[in-house]
Image (cartoon, rainbow, N blue to C red; front, side):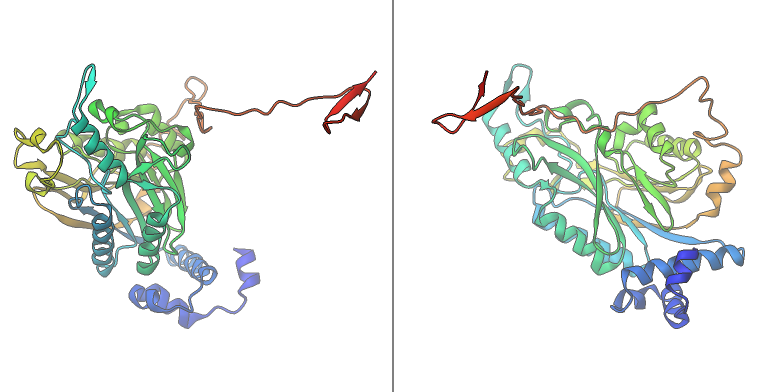
Length: 388
């Protein structure tokens, strides 16, 4: 704080008042720079401590369907739904797993043991074409959505590896700050069951937790939340607002997110899609895969949970919608007085977790170094040769 007061010895109380009490006006005031915005947040935090007030942070989780297999329309839905959430004063908006371009529930992509059909490969190619590379124009569009709405934005996407230009896709979630900056991603560590036919595995380099003025945000996708060591890695990074986008619409999932809240003593935001069979494009090569599927493909089940395992919003089933909650951040410290999974309630003298955060590469190119001893000269071909 000392540095901030040195740099900002005169506090703009007019601007501070606008920032604190009118978030909509704040979004429209271009003169609030990134540095000034950060300074205002620190002052608000200081005033909150001095006056013993509870700092509130409003979050939104979106329960809606992808525009299945159509990246452009999915981006338009993200823009529309983000704008709606922000109109209700949300500071953070979370979208479900694989929202762009789809969680392809019910499709088998023509795969069975020993063979893959041409029609299945056609559908996979369509899925691949509508996935997102990082970096790309699509990522810039998502950043602009976050910036124009002055909101933290986290979106579940299917990521196409931009380095290899190959066929591997990853189930990822991407993070953006209110200034539109891309902050990072998390790749799902272990796709579940038949997901492994279409998605690759992430590694420890994307166990991402983001620092914000309102606490640390991060999390895992769907059933990797059943991996206790993966959860512990996220807890170990000090997560306060745990994000759990999912495709699991079972009642049992509610027990999972409540457990995470109680175990991590953190807020948990979980969102799923609400999807019906009629939302699937009829021109899918393997559309017949869906003939025995129910009319409601995913019921949803989005919810927001506090650090004591209580619902703040939801669960929402059988419809689209956006859930909102004001997070009382003082509950984090209060709940960790009882239990801190990586603090006073841990036993590092007995149990320790080591996490490999290096990016795992299939091909590592090492250039051979030639060392010449003694004197040398250039031969007629311009190459060095040793003189004995």
